[in-house]
Image (cartoon, rainbow, N blue to C red; front, side):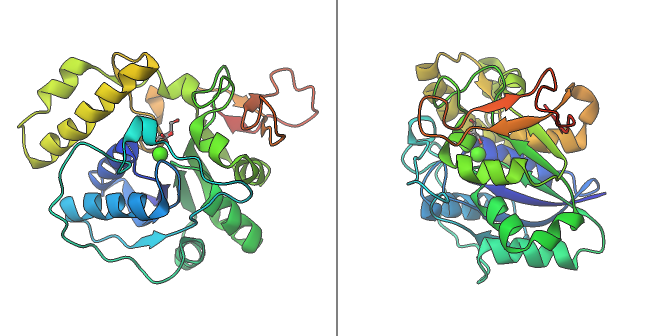
Length: 286
Ligand code: BDR
Ligand code: CA
């Protein structure tokens, strides 16, 4: 059994990841869900998280985190996820509680009070996680691993070189990558191979409440993916959860990975030290 905290910005693929984690209570004990500004504003992604958690009948605490990246202004993912950040389905607006603590404090308390080590599943810009590690550095010892969707070694999707989650807050990503915590990075090189086809999406239609919700989410997401040249839909964030459930379906390599924070065309790029030229031990797996 893994004890996990999910930090997210729903987001169609964040929603799939949350629902999948919730479907495996015998493997994943979800200590909480936290939100951060990313695909849309903090308010919008928190509403989306509430809608998903309410829809699936979850009783998991939800905490709201940082509105803005550490240094620069928020750059949202509206182009891919729509005006709400999770366009497609209609929710009847029933409320879901949000705890009073900020997500950073909430993460700290949840990790501290867990008798075993905790895995953080990071599906969004790393702002909350970076703050957690800066404000409460002693907490690192209790973090088993960060399973994250972010970055890319061969290419980006937000710029030629940078993937969205890292591009939004490269300074936060830099802190996380330099934290010494084991990281399993599901970057674009992995997640763009994890696609759901148009036919598979159609098959979810009217198969049950949750299936139909997933159909509605993916219908929009698939349409919007066409503007980026996708026919089938990469389920990026789902990989970070799926890795915890079925690591054997992934392959990866241990590499030292770093993040570029300079302004300029490489801002937000993640790169791997393939030849160990930096003298660092390989540490992160993608
Ligand atoms: C990542 O960016 C977001 O739009 C998705 O939710 C995912 O976390 C993919 O680059
Ligand atoms: Ca996301």
